[in-house]
Length: 200
Image 1 (tube, helix red, strand yellow):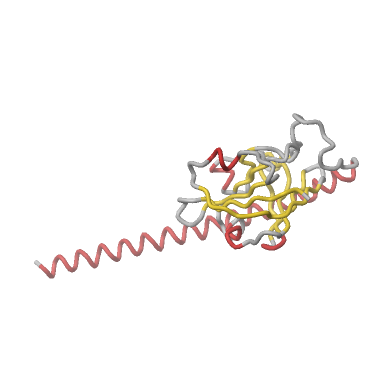
Image 2 (cartoon, one colour; image 1 turned 180 degrees about the horizontal axis):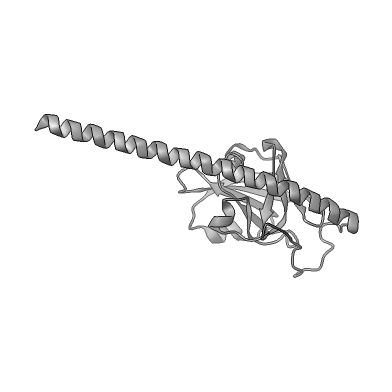
C-alpha cells in the first residue's frame, strides 16, 4: 500500500513538473513572438513618422487645441499613436491606441489619457522585450514619446510605486506631479510596477 502511494506521488510530481515546464515554455515563446511582432511594427512606424515629418512641420507640445483626437497610423489593421523610448533599458516600442488583452500581446498600449492633456498612461506586459525592466529603472532616467506626426515629448522619471490592480483611480488620476505613467505587472500579477514621469 505504501509502495503504491509512493508511486502515485512520484507520478503526480512528474506531471506537475511537466506542466510547469510546459507553462514556462509557452511564456518564453509568447514573449519571443511579441518581440518579433513589435519589432516588425516599429520598423514600419518609424518609416511612417519620417514621412509625416517630411510632409508637414510638426507642432511643439501644447500647440494643439485641447479635445483634438490624437493622430494614428494603421498598420496590419491596428491603430498606433506613436512610439515609446526608454534609453536606460535600450527599448523603443510602438504604442497602440487602445488597450486589450489581445493588443498587449503585440506591444504597449494606451491605457488612458493623451499626450495633449499631459495625462497619458501606457501599459505593457512584463515581457523582457516590453516593460519588464521598469522594476529596476531609477528616477532621473529619460523617456521619450514620439507621436505619429513626429512630435517628440521628452519626460524624466520622477518616481516608481507599486499599485494593486484594484487601484485604477490612483493609476489614472491626473495630478500635477506627473505627465506620463508607464506600468506593468510584477511577476505573479498581484501588483503593478508603476513609473511616473514629468514632461521636460
